[in-house]
Image (cartoon, rainbow, N blue to C red):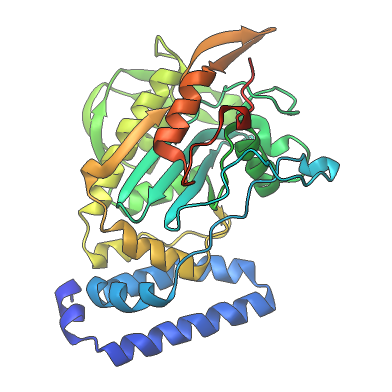
Length: 351
């Protein structure tokens, strides 16, 4: 069975009944506060909606549902009980323009990969910002680096990261996705691996992290285990973490290009993550809506960026020092969900 079959044979009445059941399930899940169950059915809901015909679903499902956006960023430190609105920020947000935070966590519960994604649904454009994990910011984490934000005040992933992104860049976080290494490897295996050129020979061993990298340079298909080695390798690049990020961007581009070419049946197999490997505030309805919309994006409308700055040191630590002027310009050009520019004084960039 394929997409054309379902598009031709699924009636509008059947689709309406299905979406009505989906809404009822969402209400029931909230009443029972069963987050783990909701996480497990997110994949199934998205998959079924995709399989039963993209055209009809887009006309019906997206007509009555639009994901919420985050409230205005609160500039106060949540650990101190402060809750003051950043009055310098613009007041009006664009309706279908969403900011995602995607964090890949290593075995030490530190952020190993950090990406901000601006998905402009209206224009069918996606911009992805890679944030070096050694980025030095004005926060109270024990290292001063952004990758320790989750540990900053002991409040956990969501509160600390929302505060960090808002305080540093003046941006709201509408949706977040935290994925661990096992979840990442599972995703790559489910799409049949990713074909790309490994830029250099990669050899590295770190028994404390249970990390062993052994990849040869050249074109190859990377399964989940090899993909992990590729994205975590950084010791062999002249530019260290920036070289690593450039390779990560090529990998993400290859992964997205493959997914965007899938048909509905193939996509239906991708969303089978256990709650043990994935933490997100995407609801079942959100996941279905974004899954439908993202297939309208063309590969050429996905752009990758790196947070501008330069390598430096703060005391004994190697860090990535941000260039404030270039950061303000980049955020406003590609990641600003507001109708007006975010003023420079809303950025808290460590000088």
